[in-house]
Image (cartoon, rainbow, N blue to C red; front, side, top):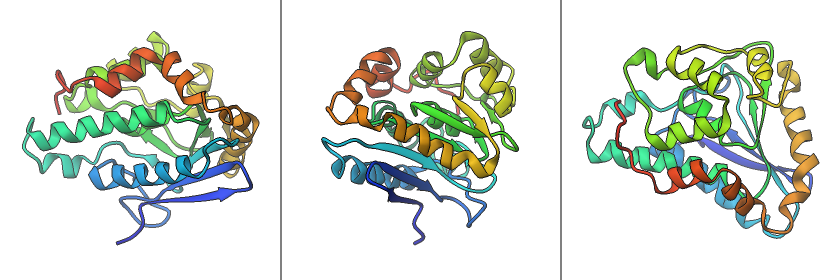
Length: 241
């Protein structure tokens, strides 16, 4: 079975988590299903276990057209609508976002291409976002497919985006470019594709020392308390798939 998530280290402080799921090289969609979520957790386990008490940061990256194309709707629709498999999967997705949101070191999403729906939420859970200015959009597609978001996912959006931008994305389904997202302060930097990864690394390196004393994750959990508690403990009621 092909590896869907890999971890490497760049120098002493930068961990790189590379997403390569649901596709072939250069065309990874990185859609979330139980296997992909388990692989990300395994990668995060390695990073966390091997960096305790030291300066560290995490850069999440991929290649090709997508950063992430959201939830694996093909797999999801094979399950009973509203059944335990679907509900447990949504709970597991919440827990993954909680873990990234409160990860005990600076995290940077290097957004190489499209970040759609759950893929955009995954990017939002990171501390910083660097996006390709040459191609790629972020959007929330639920309004156009007749789906709704769970309260925990709504809480994350409200925590990370302005009310105006959240309404644009959730109620209008707008596809927003890096330039538009930068103007709305939803990303921290935009740059040509060839510079996305190196700029994400630079941001991570700048703040990696903040992880050394072991309070970074706890402080993020306090800072983003509403979303963190919702993702950790919230139920999946009022979600329509």
